[in-house]
Length: 473
Ligand code: COA
Image (cartoon, rainbow, N blue to C red):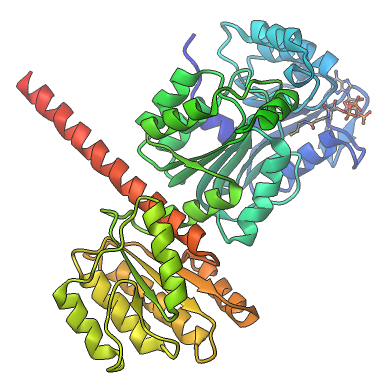
């Protein structure tokens, strides 16, 4: 039977929670409550043989006693009861099942997982988990997890093999003002896998960037094909790089980490971007969601501190970007706005007392320069610096960039400073302007924009070649 698409999985018309409980400290209670308080309309059925009603909803003794059809079943009972409930799901012709229960492959109970796979064989049922937190769907305001807190709405879809890390990522995303379209814990991945989700998010109009935390990939070929076929940037944090990390992977989800070099090469070849850690994933996601991709690797750097300019230049060069000399035209434009003693260069040093106009005019000069593909605007909170004017200039340039699509160049901020800066940076983050407190992080985010630009070029070239081949018959 053909695999069901995941459309109804994320937008079910009816949900049953098996193991729903009145006890507020139980996972089955939180799972029910999260759906109930979601701003989402669907039929909701708690299932528990010992209760008549839970949280004001009529409770059913078993799935087969529920009168209407059920799109999605969430299972939160001990592992030894899961197979029996899955058989009820088959009888009830349920479409999707989320198995929260632990106690399977992660503790060596592979036979238990095989039993579940056999039960659904040929039925078309799709399973998420076991050993999963479920998912949160901010795009449609549905919380189908037992974890507290809804992320803000946005365009990053996150797929996590670790439930706890997934929960942490929700808070990290909120802190960084990064909105999510979905966040999903895949757990032991006995059925719904990373490739299924990448395929789904590739077509999801609410998702612009896809991020994954993975410890292992079950079907390498399917994963590669999905990454390759996806026309959106894909960021991958792959854990278990070291020998000890690989050992920890085996005891976390019961899976093998595999050769790290192989993963790096495969992700790169398929067009994904490998991130060193979650902070880097969010750094890059912010840039990719908020800025246009860079059409080339030539970066213009503007700074009020020479040292920060050099650090950024080194970080750019180390990450495959170049910091070219300014063209004569741009040189002359910037010379006009700088004090006489300074000669413009790239990095463009606006010197310590740079205010709004110097930042604004030099960024504009680089936007207009066809030899520059991306711009980093940096500020050091030095004695004469005016952080408010720096932030104001970036806001104005990003706004103008949006108004005047002809530039289509990414602008990133980078800063070194204290409390006064931190408050202002929040203003930028709140409107989605990517800004980083580290030259390395900023350069890596620019690298992601460059790699995305290259991926798009390759994609267009492939499409063109395919079209020509088709026309030739
Ligand atoms: N159908 C429906 N409900 C049933 C049932 C059945 N056949 N059999 C028992 N229940 C009820 C229980 O009576 C209980 O309700 P109650 O509180 O009213 O008594 C409820 O289902 C839950 O069963 P219980 O035995 O109390 O289990 P639990 O809530 O302590 O633990 C899990 C269940 C799934 C949470 C636990 O086994 C587990 O796996 N925890 C880890 C989950 C996890 O971390 N997942 C990964 C996240 S990243």
